[in-house]
Image (tube, rainbow, N blue to C red):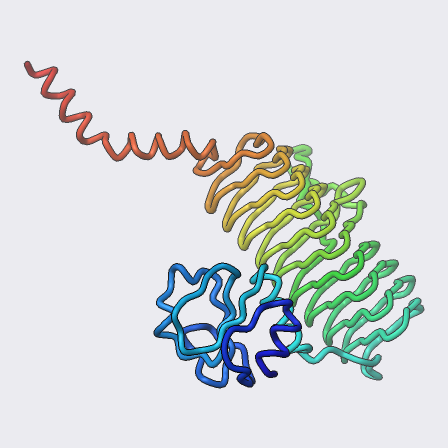
Length: 330
């Protein structure tokens, strides 16, 4: 595309010549045929970049030989141009393979199902949904419109998935919750007879597992984004817009509010509540409920300011002990 076409597409302002570029590259790797986005130009030496075209936030005008497009919202501009240059980064199934096993299923328009996928009776699949090879979809599953389900996903019976969802490879949705009673010295399994309900615009990373509830529903709200290798226990409720980062484990019956962030390797004990807008930082162990709009960290997790004070105090312990010993020896 020419720089003027890109500027028009992004609603930006072009300064410099109307060059033509063929790829989007990272700023340090871009050459004269590439366009590069610089999200934080104040932290880079723009004059050393070799890109043929730079896209910068409005209000930043560095000295550079390359033409520049200024945009008001560089993050939205980045997404928009990526979709323009690379409209289909992964080839999606565009028909129902003769090697797929599809039962008595209600399907919308333009559904694609890959080779060796199994879809059981009673399932409904919405318009434009694409299911890759080697997927298992159980009985009476509801899958909405415009969904993408990648290879190796396993969806148990009675799961409900909303519209515009992306489920990455090897996810397991609807597996049994981890529930047992100890009866006469033995662990007796509690039947897990509930469901999993996933809202609209949800993305679930590779290798994540979401357990069905014992009774009722495990619920993933609209717009939730879940990273790879996350474990979500039975009867968990995750509010709209929340983000769950890799290797997080959420025990049963936890209630997570809207727009919560759980960073990598967070562990949450059962039956707790995490309030709207709260953030739990990486490797934290949550053993009590978190109020809304708080930042927690540490093991056990506590408010960030308190945690930092405690860490600072611990680092001074040798000095404190030395002073104490001197006082006691006087």
